[in-house]
Amino acid sequence: MSRYAEQHKIALIASLEIVLMSMGNTKYNLTMAKLGVHDISIRDCHTHPEYLKPILKEVYKEDYDYIISEVKARLDELINEQDVAQFFKIMET
Image (cartoon, rainbow, N blue to C red; front, side, top):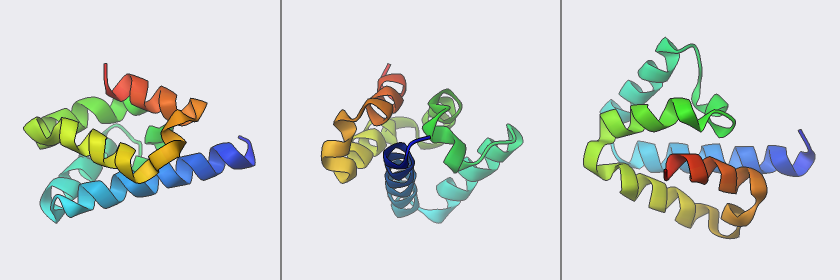
């Protein structure tokens, strides 16, 4: 992974964690536990958003679209980078 790709991953995961934590500890912890059942962590979701998407939809239900838009807003221009754009392509389909 290139240095820039690693920086994109860190920015994406940090933004995602900030948004999820702002929605409440109970749902955040439930999300982390559900990821753990699949033997992955939030840090793996950059390259495997297909694991994260159904869990967020299950835990956050009607807030799912809001979460995605908030993460995108925090990332600003990074959403145009190929690796980040690919993440959101999967999350938004």
